[in-house]
Image (cartoon, rainbow, N blue to C red; front, side, top):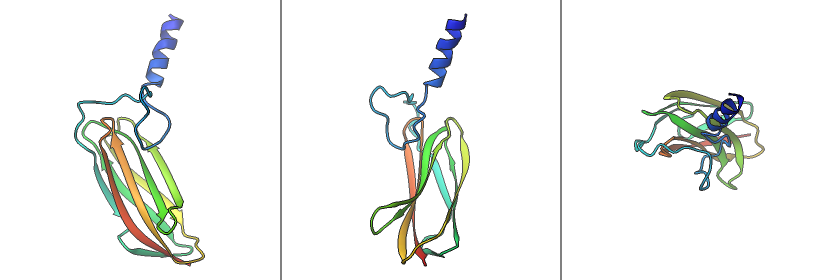
Length: 141
């Protein structure tokens, strides 16, 4: 009986990845793809606004909603420096099976020069149907 429990626990525990990455798993990876899921999630980004300007001490609030008819898998919210590609902020999500999720990420601005950035929000479902939105913002000292 105990061996059956251990095997069942292992199967459930390994049904989905725990890595938090936002790219496909290598062949043979633990993620179970739902092949009949062909509809991509619906993504709404409420803030920040396109070309919004933030100064040192301001808080950048990245908010929105993601939904999917059969359930979500994972996603990310990133702020990237446009000049050099440096990652300023990253929040990864694993939200297996959830059909609707309100996300919220904050970042306190602290720059020494004017910095143009891109906020990128990406989510995918268990069919690996992905959706992303990008918003350009500016940070000032």
